[in-house]
Length: 353
Image (cartoon, rainbow, N blue to C red; front, side, top):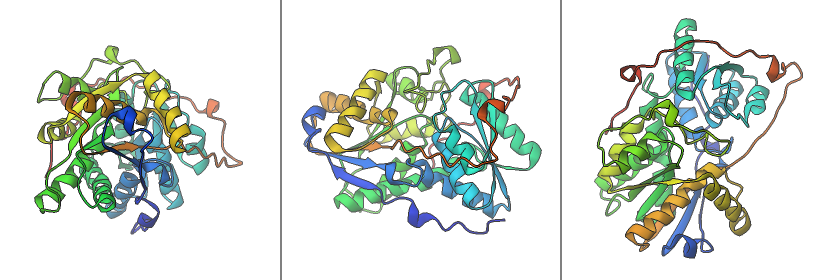
C-alpha cells in the first residue's frame, strides 16, 4: 500500500513562453502559451492523477479504476504502476486509442467497453464498487474537487511567470475540470488581492459536440446535455467530445462568473494550428488542444485583443514500454454491458469554493 505520493517535483512548472509569431494571427497584444507537454506523460492530467492517487492512498486502497479516452489512462498507468498500485483502465472500444499500447506497456489492466465514454465511466464505477477498487472517475469520491485543486496550480504558475494576471485564459474543454481548476486558482489570487481581476475564462472545444460550449452559446445558466446522437467523434476531436460533461456545471459557472467566452473549433482548424505551432514555435502539441488558440482568436475578434492572453496547450508524447509478457490488444475482449444512463444518475458538480 502506498502511504504518500512524492512525485510533485516531476509535475508542473511547465513551459510558459511568449509567442510573438502568432500574436498577429490571434489579434492580441501579447500571447503566451502554457504548454503542459513537459509533464511526465505529456499532459496536464498528471497534476490531477497524482492528487487522486494520494486520495486513494489516504483511503487505504491499493487498486484504482478509471475510464479514459487516452490521456488520463496513460497518466494513471504511468504513476499508478510505478507506485506499485493495481491500475484498471477502462476505455470505449470504438475510440481511436492512440495511447493504448503505452498504457498496456506500463503494466495496467485494460478493459475495453462497448459504448461511449459516459457508458465507460458507469461500467468502470460499477466494477470498482464490485471489486473494492478506488473509483478515480470524475464526480466520484470527491475526485472533481481534488482535481480542481490540482489544476489551480496552473493559475499560480501563470501568475508567477507574468508577475500579474492575464486578461484572458483559453482552455480546451471536455469535462470542464481543467477550466474550473484554473478559474478557481485565479479567483483565489483575486480574493487575496494578489491580482486586480479574474481573467476572462475561455472554453474551447469541438464543433462536434460539447455540453459546456452548447450551454454557454444558448445563454443557459444550467448545463444542457447533448443527446448521444448529436456527438460526432473523430480521431482529432476525441479528447474534447462528449454528450455529458461531468464537471460541466462548474465550468459553466466559471465562464459566467469571469465574464468569459466560449467557441468551437473544427478538426481542420485544430490540425492547421498544430502544424503552425510546430513550424513557428517548435512545439509538438495534441491537435485538440489548439482549440484554445482557435477560441482565443474568436474572442479577440469579438471583444478586442488588448492585454495579455494565455492559451493552455498539451503535448502529444507517446511512449511504448511494452513488456515481454503483454498480451496483444486484439486478444482482450471488450466488456459487454447494457447500461441505462438516466440524466439524474450522472454526477454533476457545481461551482465550489
